[in-house]
Length: 294
Image (cartoon, rainbow, N blue to C red; front, side, top):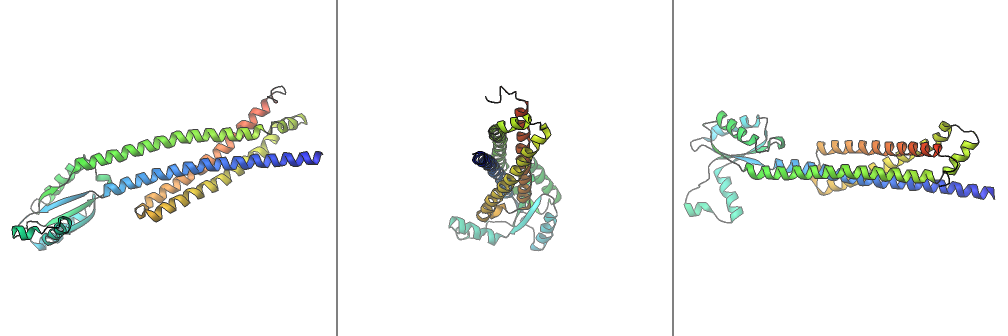
């Protein structure tokens, strides 16, 4: 009879530990998914800003020999990501492909000037910096550059919208993190609550608080380890799936973010399970004999 009760008690303990691991893993997986969405939003924001270009309209009297030195000089600028020269013939061909209309036949002359398209680095794409960049370009190459074409206001609005979306997602992530840590704490407390009589029995036979606490903390450590491995694995699998369908995410910055996210999941998993276990055991160690049955 005693052996049967012992087996039942062991199964209950194992089931409680299994439930705790599953609960913590689910919480960490959800946090990982939200973290990946945040990183995707940050990366897509950078990609969107990198799509912004400045069109430099070159002077009418510029010769072809003077274009290459200009391009070489533009490539050395810290705000330039890439430079593309567009000849009048190439511009007319692009116009024909887009509008299905050959303007050269209508006007009997090619109206497009020599142009250079500048791809800017993401950190320079905002309304405050663009006027300064344009002034610097016109000051450095006053004879070669006749004018610039850009639409900073529309891109500034896009930047603000993306930035707002990032802040909102970050706030939601923080709130959900607190809620989920609260759920982890409750799950572990309920798990240890089911073994409160065992804690009381050990106290009655003279076991010290540290002796009683040790196996619970070790179990919490293992639960945190298993939850970390499963949660981080699920996060990376989801991220790799996204990378297969969105190649623009493949950037060192995105992988650095994934590394930081994995570290955050590990810290939260270990800290939440260990601290929740320590606090729950501490509470039941202090309960009186009358309250242990409540």
